[in-house]
Image (tube, rainbow, N blue to C red; front, side, top):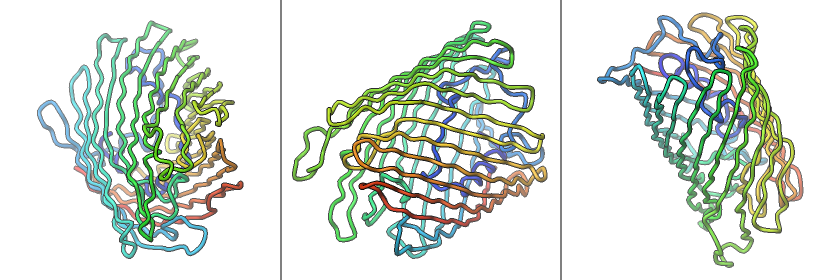
Length: 439
């Protein structure tokens, strides 16, 4: 991602609670799309407000041989009125987030390589135990074997911090839980006129660090370490240049690395290894220049090795629709229903249902205003718990010139947790301003 689009998306981030917004995924994101200009599967008649170029406000980048480098520094200062996401005794603070990053992209006429490096430094004014750093590096590439045949792959590594608003985050730790996430993927896409077939293999590896309570007692997290392997296959048929029908099937294996631990350390340990699949049918479309998107519905099933856990199954869905009522307005609707891993003792996983909406308006060529709202429902297996989350926010971005952007935003996060094993009910409000410098 280059130029002012990176300012717009960086600024939008302060209007979304980290780790708390509904994690709706676009079905189109499950497998990479072909980029052939003569393809029956092109969906680019219109460009979303935050994705389109804005003449005169594009970063120039730095040429390095056959590559372009896009350096950027983002600094956010915000007020958080409930840092620990608690129901009582809320503590507020001023926090600064400094995010340096660089993206390196090839400029070849065929094939593509892109790499990035990013750091996130979080500093609190008073609550110094919340001070953390996060790091990410990664690369992706595309091999154009033929005009209609591509092979794609990528890998990245991140050292991350679990948000206090996460349902899996322990409530009594002195510092936030840290973990490492490593991912890799490889896939291929082949197009035959009206038919397109694709396949992809993904690996995700989670490695959590133990925490400590405010009294110094250990908070063990090794039981959350796991690897997730996913294989996805997809076939699409273009019934017209504007519409394609598809069938997509993915299978997954979730393998936890802690087996037969000491009963004294993990008295409530259970094996959460599982296998599952998701089967979807649907359509992707671009109806004139007004609407484009993808809708997929089907069935999902997750079965656990431990017989004490019931299967999780039911309706599966992934959707993303973009509506362009005018050239200056983009409305994006998202939805998903998926099986996720639980980080809560006694639960094997949960069925996560999410809906989201976002409106972006180009008030001026260099002024973008936006509003977002999302709702999520997590129904846990193995324990009596159901979490409901609501997130809403507004933001405004002012592009001063090619190199400087300013964003202000407000976000409200709310959780209601029901059941005998329910978590806390809480609200978090954040108000902040972001300054982005890029070259």
